[in-house]
Length: 124
Length: 154
Image (tube, rainbow over all chains, first blue to last red; front, side, top):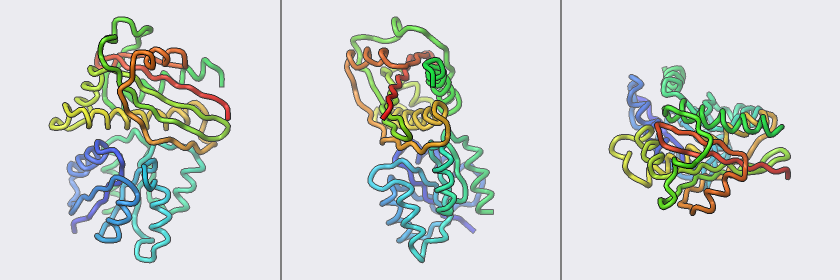
């Protein structure tokens, strides 16, 4: 079964870097979709099937926290698997993310093998 | 936090991000003289932070050689000479440094809001003013870069 992944980050470089890591992970992946902010990401998950979202927090227009709140409030999307990749390290923020049902939190700088291991763990 | 600890946090975060995230070799230097071309453009990436009882900014200053080296290290070969992509990488570097700096310097108790990175060309005066704040200069893959951090109480 091929898994569909959405990468949400306002940095084009980070999206490309994550895409490359996923391409090299050895997993059977289907579509790898991209969004530059939470609003674009919300449109995407409402229109397309997505198995896993890699989500940045600090983004313009709609940040990652707002995206998560919208997803959890949507009956069709509330169980969507989300992995956060962010620079933020406060305990309160990590707790907030757990309460919003985030499956894993990876703190930037992130090594490619951390991303690959997380995908394997969540999708295998 | 004392100035010595703040200074240590600035240096540690800059070196760690350059070496572990950007995969660049670093060397410490003490002065910008001889490492920057006054007649050439300066680039900056600035991220403001606010949380707990503190606020401030993290600003990276560099010139074209560092931007090119960062692009070579982080970007795909087809993008590494594209200045828009190089500035995107510089912006992301500012974001990673600022997020790590606030935790390193102030601990993990408070949530800090970070602004979206602002990348722009700045003049010699703005570059010179960076040295009036807490800062660290180093060579990364033999190209010079400065991290300047200002912190104030709310």
